[in-house]
Image (cartoon, rainbow over all chains, first blue to last red; front, side):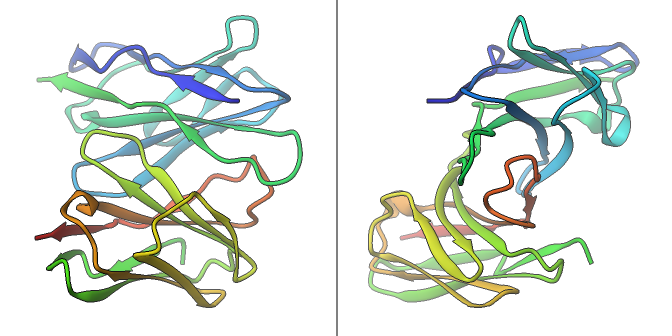
Length: 115
Length: 115
């Protein structure tokens, strides 16, 4: 069975400082990893994904994520946080072992950027 | 058009009512999904349609009845719901259900309240 862990319910960071939102995963076969962001009363919005290749993935709005196979992690990062980045962030994983593979979401991390 | 639309945005219904949620996408995606999301929780998969056929039902109670009239539309028919069914209902689509590295495109959701 596959799983995703987001160990922090909430991350607080000052505007202009770098931010990291942590994610670790467990999956059989090749992992396909995703980050989504959700603003209040809205649907999820895709930020970035890791399929294969370069371990550093760049996505929307200046976000990036680093895939680390040995640590089974896929942490989301941004060099300089904006107040508008405040939202709920979900890490997700799908296995790649053939057939339909369900998306497993983490429990979410609320990011609060303080002006 | 890279948007998934959902109507209505808000719905309040009694336990004896019958109502329907609607979802539409014009991206040519052949996989469509219904998710249920409680506050501050990750989305929970309910149904997956692949090429307009129901391929996954995550043991959802029969008071929820999905329908996919064509490749662009997805409905969720509601009947005899319970107050605990109150949640944000999200529709999503992706190019193909079995391609694990495709991200999903989410609609803004319907906020359902069951009285």
